[in-house]
Length: 144
Ligand SMILES: [Zn+2]
Image (cartoon, rainbow, N blue to C red; front, side, top):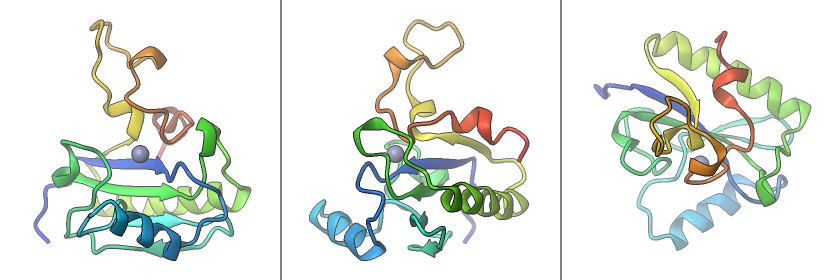
Protein backbone atom coordinates (compact mmCIF):
# COMPACT_ATOMS: atom_id res chain seq x y z
CA UNK A 1 0.00 0.00 0.00
CA UNK A 2 1.10 3.57 0.46
CA UNK A 3 0.52 4.63 -3.14
CA UNK A 4 -0.66 8.19 -3.66
CA UNK A 5 -3.75 7.60 -5.83
CA UNK A 6 -4.55 10.71 -7.87
CA UNK A 7 -6.73 9.15 -10.56
CA UNK A 8 -9.32 6.44 -10.95
CA UNK A 9 -9.06 5.73 -14.67
CA UNK A 10 -11.97 4.14 -16.54
CA UNK A 11 -11.25 1.89 -19.53
CA UNK A 12 -12.86 -0.44 -22.02
CA UNK A 13 -10.94 -3.58 -22.93
CA UNK A 14 -11.34 -2.67 -26.63
CA UNK A 15 -12.48 -6.24 -27.23
CA UNK A 16 -15.58 -8.39 -27.45
CA UNK A 17 -18.00 -7.68 -24.56
CA UNK A 18 -18.08 -11.42 -23.80
CA UNK A 19 -14.35 -11.51 -22.97
CA UNK A 20 -13.52 -13.29 -19.73
CA UNK A 21 -10.88 -12.47 -17.14
CA UNK A 22 -9.00 -15.51 -18.46
CA UNK A 23 -9.00 -14.00 -21.99
CA UNK A 24 -7.58 -10.77 -20.61
CA UNK A 25 -4.86 -12.58 -18.68
CA UNK A 26 -3.75 -14.23 -21.93
CA UNK A 27 -3.63 -10.85 -23.71
CA UNK A 28 -1.65 -9.21 -20.91
CA UNK A 29 0.83 -12.08 -20.89
CA UNK A 30 1.22 -11.77 -24.67
CA UNK A 31 1.99 -8.08 -24.14
CA UNK A 32 4.79 -9.22 -21.89
CA UNK A 33 3.30 -7.46 -18.87
CA UNK A 34 4.17 -8.67 -15.41
CA UNK A 35 1.02 -7.07 -13.95
CA UNK A 36 -2.44 -6.86 -15.54
CA UNK A 37 -3.76 -3.79 -17.37
CA UNK A 38 -6.45 -3.12 -14.78
CA UNK A 39 -7.11 -3.56 -11.07
CA UNK A 40 -10.79 -4.33 -11.66
CA UNK A 41 -12.73 -5.61 -14.63
CA UNK A 42 -16.52 -5.64 -14.98
CA UNK A 43 -17.68 -8.44 -17.29
CA UNK A 44 -20.83 -8.27 -19.42
CA UNK A 45 -22.88 -10.03 -16.70
CA UNK A 46 -22.03 -7.18 -14.31
CA UNK A 47 -19.64 -9.19 -12.16
CA UNK A 48 -16.76 -7.22 -10.69
CA UNK A 49 -13.44 -9.09 -10.84
CA UNK A 50 -10.34 -8.00 -8.99
CA UNK A 51 -7.25 -8.63 -11.12
CA UNK A 52 -4.65 -6.89 -8.99
CA UNK A 53 -4.17 -5.61 -5.44
CA UNK A 54 -4.76 -1.85 -5.29
CA UNK A 55 -1.33 -1.36 -3.73
CA UNK A 56 0.32 -2.64 -6.90
CA UNK A 57 0.74 -0.80 -10.21
CA UNK A 58 -1.27 -1.95 -13.27
CA UNK A 59 -0.70 -1.10 -16.95
CA UNK A 60 -3.63 1.17 -17.79
CA UNK A 61 -2.43 4.68 -18.67
CA UNK A 62 1.11 5.23 -19.90
CA UNK A 63 2.90 7.74 -17.68
CA UNK A 64 0.26 7.72 -14.92
CA UNK A 65 0.10 4.16 -13.66
CA UNK A 66 1.92 4.77 -10.39
CA UNK A 67 -0.86 7.19 -9.32
CA UNK A 68 -3.81 5.31 -10.91
CA UNK A 69 -6.37 2.74 -10.02
CA UNK A 70 -7.41 1.28 -13.39
CA UNK A 71 -10.95 0.00 -13.88
CA UNK A 72 -12.35 -1.51 -17.10
CA UNK A 73 -15.48 -3.01 -18.61
CA UNK A 74 -15.18 -5.77 -21.19
CA UNK A 75 -16.16 -4.41 -24.60
CA UNK A 76 -15.71 -1.18 -26.49
CA UNK A 77 -14.90 -2.98 -29.72
CA UNK A 78 -14.70 -0.60 -32.74
CA UNK A 79 -14.75 2.40 -30.39
CA UNK A 80 -18.42 1.78 -29.48
CA UNK A 81 -19.92 2.03 -26.01
CA UNK A 82 -21.07 -1.57 -25.64
CA UNK A 83 -21.79 -1.49 -21.89
CA UNK A 84 -24.69 -3.68 -20.74
CA UNK A 85 -27.08 -2.31 -18.09
CA UNK A 86 -25.42 -4.70 -15.61
CA UNK A 87 -22.00 -3.27 -16.44
CA UNK A 88 -23.27 0.30 -16.08
CA UNK A 89 -24.71 -0.47 -12.65
CA UNK A 90 -21.60 -2.31 -11.45
CA UNK A 91 -19.24 0.41 -12.66
CA UNK A 92 -21.14 2.98 -10.61
CA UNK A 93 -21.05 0.70 -7.57
CA UNK A 94 -17.33 0.03 -7.97
CA UNK A 95 -16.49 3.71 -8.47
CA UNK A 96 -18.51 4.66 -5.38
CA UNK A 97 -16.53 2.14 -3.31
CA UNK A 98 -13.23 3.46 -4.69
CA UNK A 99 -14.36 7.04 -4.12
CA UNK A 100 -14.75 6.26 -0.39
CA UNK A 101 -11.19 4.96 -0.26
CA UNK A 102 -9.70 7.72 -2.39
CA UNK A 103 -11.78 10.84 -1.73
CA UNK A 104 -9.40 13.17 -3.60
CA UNK A 105 -8.83 11.07 -6.72
CA UNK A 106 -10.12 12.34 -10.08
CA UNK A 107 -12.42 9.89 -11.88
CA UNK A 108 -11.90 10.13 -15.64
CA UNK A 109 -11.68 8.09 -18.81
CA UNK A 110 -8.44 6.94 -20.40
CA UNK A 111 -8.95 9.41 -23.24
CA UNK A 112 -9.09 12.30 -20.76
CA UNK A 113 -5.36 11.77 -20.14
CA UNK A 114 -4.65 12.93 -23.71
CA UNK A 115 -2.61 16.12 -24.10
CA UNK A 116 -4.55 19.34 -24.67
CA UNK A 117 -2.76 20.07 -27.95
CA UNK A 118 -4.41 23.41 -28.74
CA UNK A 119 -4.40 24.45 -25.03
CA UNK A 120 -8.07 25.46 -24.93
CA UNK A 121 -8.63 23.67 -21.62
CA UNK A 122 -10.67 20.85 -23.17
CA UNK A 123 -9.59 17.42 -24.36
CA UNK A 124 -11.31 17.19 -27.72
CA UNK A 125 -11.94 14.19 -29.93
CA UNK A 126 -9.18 15.15 -32.37
CA UNK A 127 -6.71 15.13 -29.44
CA UNK A 128 -7.62 11.71 -27.98
CA UNK A 129 -4.72 9.26 -27.78
CA UNK A 130 -7.45 6.61 -28.04
CA UNK A 131 -11.23 6.49 -27.75
CA UNK A 132 -11.12 4.39 -24.55
CA UNK A 133 -13.52 4.02 -22.68
CA UNK A 134 -15.87 5.06 -25.56
CA UNK A 135 -18.07 7.29 -23.40
CA UNK A 136 -17.64 10.51 -21.44
CA UNK A 137 -16.69 9.09 -18.04
CA UNK A 138 -15.79 12.48 -16.61
CA UNK A 139 -19.33 13.80 -17.14
CA UNK A 140 -21.17 10.56 -16.42
CA UNK A 141 -19.43 10.07 -13.05
CA UNK A 142 -19.11 13.67 -11.93
CA UNK A 143 -21.52 13.17 -9.00
CA UNK A 144 -19.57 10.21 -7.59
ZN1 LIG B 1 -7.82 2.40 -21.80
